[in-house]
Image (cartoon, rainbow, N blue to C red; front, top):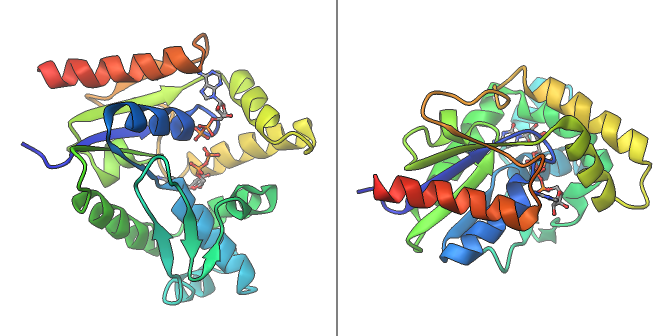
Length: 223
Ligand SMILES: Nc1ncnc2c1ncn2[C@@H]1O[C@H](COP(=O)(O)OP(=O)(O)O)[C@@H](O)[C@H]1O
Ligand SMILES: Nc1ccn([C@@H]2O[C@H](COP(=O)(O)OP(=O)(O)O)[C@@H](O)[C@H]2O)c(=O)n1
């Protein structure tokens, strides 16, 4: 028996991974880990250090001074880099615009994957919902529950645009599409790998999507 029970959730930008996983964790009394936040926090750190995100060697060099802090409480979710609370700053379009360049570096991925595995292993709650792009395939391929959460591109764009009210909706949509294209060259999060259950939220509202994910977890529990 695996401790904690790991629920791995992957999917493209705006599919609902973060909000749905957090709500599922809350409902089940599980921990929650947003792995994209770590890539975003590193992109923030790179920008803060005036490092060119396209300069691979400099990005790798910046890992040494990257003091990342994140908890797994779905209710008290804050992201820190050193003393800085970057929870809101890492969601800004200027960070979304450079995060893929940082995330494609293999040394960066190896470093952060080690961190994620340590956080998962240290989880004290009975389970943890971990969401990202390569959780079902690379970070936790042995997870008890593996889900690919998708939604049509149109729906994902309109959800993200609603969230970033005040920013240009067309620019937000174009950035989301460009980021998915860049990210999908590094890991495949558009097709469900063997043993991964597809949950398509295009026609589901938020509550129905949470219920769909919980049904997959319950079904796995009964196996
Ligand atoms: N099934 C759904 N129906 C309507 N809105 C949703 C649904 N799932 C997620 N959302 C909303 O869409 C937005 C993007 O979700 P988010 O969890 O940030 O996606 P991701 O982490 O995959 O990028 C959020 O504002 C969230 O509340
Ligand atoms: N497991 C992961 C999670 C995120 N990422 C990278 O981190 C970025 C931000 O991830 P995110 O999950 O916060 O993005 P959204 O889908 O929430 O917009 C992605 O665009 C990827 O470049 C990754 O490479 N692998």
